[in-house]
Length: 138
Length: 138
Image (tube, rainbow over all chains, first blue to last red; front, side, top):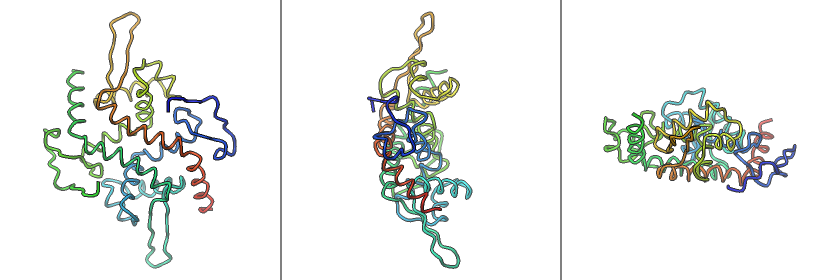
Protein backbone atom coordinates (compact mmCIF):
# COMPACT_ATOMS: atom_id res chain seq x y z
CA UNK A 1 0.00 0.00 0.00
CA UNK A 2 2.99 2.32 0.22
CA UNK A 3 3.71 2.78 -3.44
CA UNK A 4 0.71 4.88 -4.40
CA UNK A 5 0.61 5.68 -8.06
CA UNK A 6 -2.26 8.13 -7.95
CA UNK A 7 -1.24 9.99 -11.09
CA UNK A 8 -0.63 6.93 -13.17
CA UNK A 9 -4.07 5.37 -12.82
CA UNK A 10 -5.88 5.72 -16.14
CA UNK A 11 -9.51 6.58 -15.45
CA UNK A 12 -11.47 5.50 -18.47
CA UNK A 13 -14.74 3.83 -19.35
CA UNK A 14 -13.50 0.26 -19.08
CA UNK A 15 -12.27 0.65 -15.52
CA UNK A 16 -12.42 -3.03 -14.75
CA UNK A 17 -10.01 -3.83 -17.54
CA UNK A 18 -7.62 -0.95 -17.18
CA UNK A 19 -7.16 -0.65 -13.42
CA UNK A 20 -4.41 -2.90 -12.18
CA UNK A 21 -5.09 -1.79 -8.63
CA UNK A 22 -7.34 0.70 -6.89
CA UNK A 23 -6.25 3.58 -4.66
CA UNK A 24 -8.57 4.44 -1.79
CA UNK A 25 -6.67 7.69 -1.20
CA UNK A 26 -7.76 8.99 -4.56
CA UNK A 27 -11.18 10.63 -4.55
CA UNK A 28 -11.84 9.57 -8.13
CA UNK A 29 -11.02 5.89 -7.66
CA UNK A 30 -14.06 3.57 -7.45
CA UNK A 31 -12.33 1.60 -4.68
CA UNK A 32 -13.19 4.42 -2.30
CA UNK A 33 -16.91 4.00 -2.95
CA UNK A 34 -16.63 0.24 -2.44
CA UNK A 35 -14.81 0.85 0.83
CA UNK A 36 -17.55 3.22 1.95
CA UNK A 37 -20.29 0.74 1.14
CA UNK A 38 -18.71 -2.18 2.97
CA UNK A 39 -17.81 -0.01 5.98
CA UNK A 40 -21.13 1.82 6.18
CA UNK A 41 -22.85 1.78 9.56
CA UNK A 42 -25.07 -1.16 8.65
CA UNK A 43 -23.07 -2.62 5.77
CA UNK A 44 -20.41 -3.91 8.18
CA UNK A 45 -22.94 -5.68 10.38
CA UNK A 46 -24.93 -7.19 7.51
CA UNK A 47 -21.78 -8.57 5.88
CA UNK A 48 -20.71 -10.17 9.16
CA UNK A 49 -24.22 -11.53 9.82
CA UNK A 50 -24.36 -13.14 6.36
CA UNK A 51 -21.16 -15.07 7.10
CA UNK A 52 -23.42 -17.28 9.19
CA UNK A 53 -25.16 -18.43 5.99
CA UNK A 54 -28.26 -17.58 3.96
CA UNK A 55 -30.74 -15.35 5.80
CA UNK A 56 -34.25 -14.15 5.24
CA UNK A 57 -34.95 -10.43 5.58
CA UNK A 58 -36.64 -10.90 8.94
CA UNK A 59 -33.74 -13.02 10.26
CA UNK A 60 -31.28 -10.27 9.39
CA UNK A 61 -33.50 -7.65 10.96
CA UNK A 62 -33.53 -9.61 14.22
CA UNK A 63 -29.80 -10.27 14.18
CA UNK A 64 -28.70 -6.71 13.42
CA UNK A 65 -30.02 -5.12 16.57
CA UNK A 66 -31.45 -1.63 16.00
CA UNK A 67 -31.66 -1.54 12.19
CA UNK A 68 -34.86 -0.22 10.62
CA UNK A 69 -36.62 -2.04 7.78
CA UNK A 70 -35.80 0.85 5.48
CA UNK A 71 -32.07 0.87 6.25
CA UNK A 72 -31.86 -2.91 5.99
CA UNK A 73 -33.52 -2.85 2.57
CA UNK A 74 -31.34 0.03 1.35
CA UNK A 75 -28.09 -1.48 2.59
CA UNK A 76 -28.91 -4.91 1.14
CA UNK A 77 -29.67 -3.26 -2.19
CA UNK A 78 -26.33 -1.41 -2.21
CA UNK A 79 -24.43 -4.59 -1.33
CA UNK A 80 -26.36 -6.46 -4.01
CA UNK A 81 -25.51 -3.81 -6.63
CA UNK A 82 -21.85 -4.01 -5.62
CA UNK A 83 -21.95 -7.76 -6.28
CA UNK A 84 -21.37 -8.80 -2.66
CA UNK A 85 -24.84 -10.06 -1.81
CA UNK A 86 -27.12 -12.36 -3.79
CA UNK A 87 -30.87 -11.87 -3.46
CA UNK A 88 -33.07 -14.81 -4.38
CA UNK A 89 -36.84 -14.37 -4.46
CA UNK A 90 -38.71 -17.69 -4.42
CA UNK A 91 -41.99 -17.45 -6.37
CA UNK A 92 -44.26 -18.63 -3.57
CA UNK A 93 -47.07 -17.14 -1.53
CA UNK A 94 -46.31 -15.55 0.87
CA UNK A 95 -43.10 -14.22 -0.78
CA UNK A 96 -39.89 -15.86 0.39
CA UNK A 97 -36.71 -13.83 -0.22
CA UNK A 98 -33.26 -15.01 0.79
CA UNK A 99 -29.94 -13.20 1.00
CA UNK A 100 -26.48 -14.74 0.88
CA UNK A 101 -22.90 -13.73 0.15
CA UNK A 102 -21.48 -14.09 -3.37
CA UNK A 103 -17.91 -15.47 -3.68
CA UNK A 104 -16.49 -11.94 -3.75
CA UNK A 105 -18.79 -11.06 -0.84
CA UNK A 106 -17.29 -13.93 1.14
CA UNK A 107 -13.85 -12.48 0.51
CA UNK A 108 -14.65 -8.94 1.58
CA UNK A 109 -16.74 -10.00 4.57
CA UNK A 110 -13.82 -12.06 5.87
CA UNK A 111 -11.77 -8.87 6.24
CA UNK A 112 -14.70 -6.97 7.75
CA UNK A 113 -15.25 -9.77 10.23
CA UNK A 114 -11.55 -9.80 11.16
CA UNK A 115 -11.87 -6.13 12.09
CA UNK A 116 -15.13 -6.55 14.02
CA UNK A 117 -13.80 -9.63 15.73
CA UNK A 118 -10.61 -7.86 16.80
CA UNK A 119 -12.67 -4.97 18.23
CA UNK A 120 -14.91 -7.39 20.15
CA UNK A 121 -11.96 -9.31 21.57
CA UNK A 122 -9.97 -6.17 22.39
CA UNK A 123 -12.82 -4.17 23.86
CA UNK A 124 -11.48 -4.11 27.45
CA UNK A 125 -8.09 -2.92 26.14
CA UNK A 126 -9.75 -0.34 23.87
CA UNK A 127 -11.92 1.02 26.68
CA UNK A 128 -8.80 1.27 28.83
CA UNK A 129 -6.94 3.21 26.11
CA UNK A 130 -9.98 5.47 25.71
CA UNK A 131 -10.06 6.21 29.43
CA UNK A 132 -6.36 7.05 29.42
CA UNK A 133 -6.81 9.34 26.41
CA UNK A 134 -9.74 11.12 27.99
CA UNK A 135 -7.95 11.56 31.32
CA UNK A 136 -5.01 13.08 29.47
CA UNK A 137 -7.31 15.51 27.67
CA UNK A 138 -8.77 16.95 30.92
CA UNK B 1 -18.04 -14.77 16.48
CA UNK B 2 -20.82 -17.30 16.35
CA UNK B 3 -21.48 -17.73 20.04
CA UNK B 4 -23.09 -14.38 20.79
CA UNK B 5 -23.99 -13.95 24.39
CA UNK B 6 -25.93 -10.73 24.06
CA UNK B 7 -28.04 -11.27 27.15
CA UNK B 8 -25.20 -12.23 29.41
CA UNK B 9 -23.11 -9.10 28.97
CA UNK B 10 -23.27 -7.08 32.18
CA UNK B 11 -23.52 -3.40 31.27
CA UNK B 12 -22.23 -1.46 34.24
CA UNK B 13 -20.06 1.54 35.03
CA UNK B 14 -16.76 -0.29 34.99
CA UNK B 15 -17.24 -1.65 31.49
CA UNK B 16 -13.56 -2.15 30.85
CA UNK B 17 -13.26 -4.51 33.77
CA UNK B 18 -16.49 -6.40 33.41
CA UNK B 19 -16.77 -7.01 29.67
CA UNK B 20 -15.00 -10.18 28.66
CA UNK B 21 -15.82 -9.53 25.03
CA UNK B 22 -17.84 -7.00 23.04
CA UNK B 23 -20.76 -7.75 20.74
CA UNK B 24 -21.11 -5.46 17.72
CA UNK B 25 -24.59 -6.86 17.06
CA UNK B 26 -25.87 -5.42 20.32
CA UNK B 27 -26.92 -1.78 20.06
CA UNK B 28 -25.92 -1.12 23.67
CA UNK B 29 -22.41 -2.52 23.42
CA UNK B 30 -19.63 0.10 23.18
CA UNK B 31 -17.84 -2.05 20.59
CA UNK B 32 -20.39 -0.89 18.05
CA UNK B 33 -19.42 2.75 18.56
CA UNK B 34 -15.73 1.87 18.25
CA UNK B 35 -16.49 0.01 15.02
CA UNK B 36 -18.35 3.04 13.68
CA UNK B 37 -15.50 5.39 14.51
CA UNK B 38 -12.80 3.29 12.88
CA UNK B 39 -14.95 2.58 9.81
CA UNK B 40 -16.22 6.13 9.38
CA UNK B 41 -15.78 7.67 5.94
CA UNK B 42 -12.56 9.45 6.90
CA UNK B 43 -11.54 7.37 9.93
CA UNK B 44 -10.61 4.44 7.69
CA UNK B 45 -8.36 6.55 5.47
CA UNK B 46 -6.68 8.42 8.33
CA UNK B 47 -5.89 5.17 10.14
CA UNK B 48 -4.35 3.71 7.00
CA UNK B 49 -2.42 6.92 6.25
CA UNK B 50 -0.94 6.98 9.77
CA UNK B 51 0.48 3.49 9.26
CA UNK B 52 3.12 5.26 7.17
CA UNK B 53 4.39 6.96 10.37
CA UNK B 54 3.96 10.25 12.23
CA UNK B 55 2.22 12.95 10.19
CA UNK B 56 1.56 16.64 10.55
CA UNK B 57 -1.98 17.89 9.99
CA UNK B 58 -1.12 19.33 6.59
CA UNK B 59 0.56 16.08 5.49
CA UNK B 60 -2.58 14.12 6.34
CA UNK B 61 -4.73 16.64 4.55
CA UNK B 62 -2.68 16.20 1.39
CA UNK B 63 -2.61 12.42 1.63
CA UNK B 64 -6.32 11.93 2.25
CA UNK B 65 -7.56 13.33 -1.01
CA UNK B 66 -10.79 15.33 -0.68
CA UNK B 67 -11.01 15.72 3.11
CA UNK B 68 -11.88 19.16 4.48
CA UNK B 69 -9.90 20.75 7.34
CA UNK B 70 -12.97 20.50 9.53
CA UNK B 71 -13.56 16.80 8.92
CA UNK B 72 -9.87 16.00 9.34
CA UNK B 73 -9.80 17.82 12.69
CA UNK B 74 -13.04 16.17 13.87
CA UNK B 75 -12.01 12.66 12.84
CA UNK B 76 -8.56 13.00 14.41
CA UNK B 77 -10.19 14.17 17.63
CA UNK B 78 -12.55 11.16 17.69
CA UNK B 79 -9.69 8.74 17.04
CA UNK B 80 -7.63 10.50 19.74
CA UNK B 81 -10.49 10.20 22.26
CA UNK B 82 -10.84 6.52 21.39
CA UNK B 83 -7.15 6.06 22.24
CA UNK B 84 -6.08 5.13 18.69
CA UNK B 85 -4.24 8.33 17.77
CA UNK B 86 -1.69 10.31 19.75
CA UNK B 87 -1.56 14.08 19.24
CA UNK B 88 1.66 15.82 20.22
CA UNK B 89 1.82 19.62 20.13
CA UNK B 90 5.38 20.92 20.17
CA UNK B 91 5.60 24.31 21.95
CA UNK B 92 7.22 26.22 19.13
CA UNK B 93 6.26 29.14 16.90
CA UNK B 94 4.69 28.53 14.46
CA UNK B 95 2.82 25.64 16.17
CA UNK B 96 3.95 22.15 15.23
CA UNK B 97 1.43 19.37 15.87
CA UNK B 98 2.09 15.75 15.06
CA UNK B 99 -0.21 12.74 14.89
CA UNK B 100 0.75 9.10 15.24
CA UNK B 101 -0.84 5.74 16.06
CA UNK B 102 -0.87 4.46 19.65
CA UNK B 103 -0.07 0.75 20.17
CA UNK B 104 -3.78 -0.12 20.12
CA UNK B 105 -4.17 2.17 17.10
CA UNK B 106 -1.49 0.15 15.30
CA UNK B 107 -3.48 -3.01 16.01
CA UNK B 108 -6.81 -1.72 14.74
CA UNK B 109 -5.32 0.04 11.73
CA UNK B 110 -3.69 -3.21 10.64
CA UNK B 111 -7.15 -4.76 10.21
CA UNK B 112 -8.50 -1.66 8.50
CA UNK B 113 -5.55 -1.67 6.12
CA UNK B 114 -6.08 -5.37 5.35
CA UNK B 115 -9.59 -4.52 4.23
CA UNK B 116 -8.60 -1.45 2.20
CA UNK B 117 -5.68 -3.33 0.70
CA UNK B 118 -7.90 -6.24 -0.33
CA UNK B 119 -10.35 -3.84 -1.98
CA UNK B 120 -7.54 -2.10 -3.88
CA UNK B 121 -6.05 -5.39 -5.06
CA UNK B 122 -9.43 -6.89 -5.96
CA UNK B 123 -10.90 -3.83 -7.64
CA UNK B 124 -11.01 -5.32 -11.16
CA UNK B 125 -12.77 -8.42 -9.79
CA UNK B 126 -15.17 -6.26 -7.71
CA UNK B 127 -16.04 -4.04 -10.67
CA UNK B 128 -16.70 -7.18 -12.69
CA UNK B 129 -19.02 -8.58 -10.00
CA UNK B 130 -20.78 -5.22 -9.84
CA UNK B 131 -21.35 -5.20 -13.59
CA UNK B 132 -22.77 -8.72 -13.46
CA UNK B 133 -25.08 -7.77 -10.59
CA UNK B 134 -26.33 -4.69 -12.37
CA UNK B 135 -26.90 -6.53 -15.61
CA UNK B 136 -28.93 -9.13 -13.71
CA UNK B 137 -31.03 -6.39 -12.14
CA UNK B 138 -32.09 -4.88 -15.51
